[in-house]
Image 1: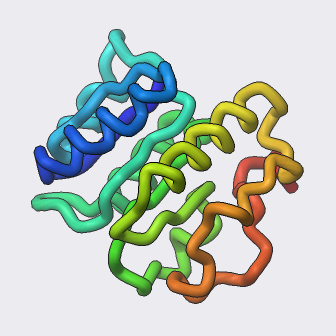
Image 2 (image 1 turned 180 degrees about the vertical axis):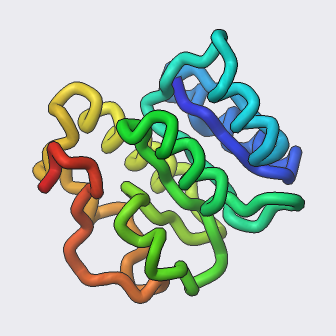
Length: 151
């Protein structure tokens, strides 16, 4: 199960279509606050990963991520953004960064990586460096997962 948080209905639908091709279930949320409400509910089930936009009304994807990680630090996040500036305080909390526009192959690789993290306790050997747009985001060339099992 993947969770997609994006205020653009078109992008949410496109991601759902791309993810479902690979036999994965998807839940979508139109805002950060809507997702936080779900995370705090009794109905919450942790996803393989949360794919989130950064710029959304009322609360950014980064702010949402911090609040979600305070509730459940094991949740993995992928940032989908066209912005190259990631505030330093968030760089070590995100598993994968994917620049917009992204391709179906990049989404497929991302799904594979997160599924491997689930199966293999987030081993850096999953090859996440193949996916990350590291240079676009001014990040070091190594792409290690921030989860403890990766370090």
